[in-house]
Image (cartoon, rainbow, N blue to C red; front, top):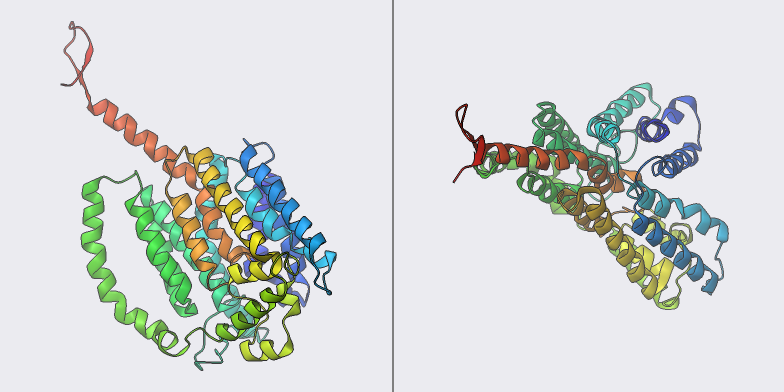
Length: 400
């Protein structure tokens, strides 16, 4: 119960942003605290995966050791320790087996997050407290951002679409509504990378589900492919300008700087959590952001060559272990969404915000639906393979 209360409060605090209405400037600090408390409470009272906990310990030890070894003159233990929540939240949220109540919560909370963010953003915009239609500097086009920014809103939207597919897989009609609503918000936000990821994740989640037979999947493909082609003009109107004109949106300048900085500290990096705070003013003006927008380059700078490979190796093993531990390898969506998350890490700050790593966490939390569908299908197949003989016979025998 504490986990579900804390998780619900954390995500609602994150998307509704009451600090905008109350004039609280440091709401981000409260968000991080509550997300960390929710993550810490998740393993309590649940079956814990010792492999993930062990990998978490190894990852933390490595990050601290590299921090102790760095020669970067502006290294700060305060910055490093303050950024550890980015590691703790992800690992702890997959470190135990969710129960049916956890599954039900995430099935209906996650698809509502982007709509809530959008609605709250429009409300604050009407009050003059927040501009929810900021203009992108390199295209001159307005992107809908809700209460966050357009990229984070896109991240919430694809998680909502994914869980909508989960609901569809268990024959809940609300799944279709959630998919369409979150898709419209995604198009309004104009998230190119997020759109590319969900175009891969959503169909694979449906096609690899055990809930549908081959005929249903082929029927869905037969209807879905023409519908997707027919929708292409709408998609183009929504994000065509960004696809044509925005390019890398200035990322190339940031990435060049990060590679140069990595060459200066290739072995131990500059310290985990430091990249955002050490970007020079000239790069910030060019890119209008201090964030790397590529987590692989970010961690290359912060942890060095050994550290970045070790970090992602540990994370990959952790998710594979969670997939095996939670679903006994029945739920391919855990690996599919994690692969999508890794793709998002190429162009976005996927490690530092729950708007992005919500996608694989939602797959873990809702994995119980797939496990139940596997058991249900097996029971149906077993019952169909039996023939009940008339009364007075030998009983039930296997159909030949």
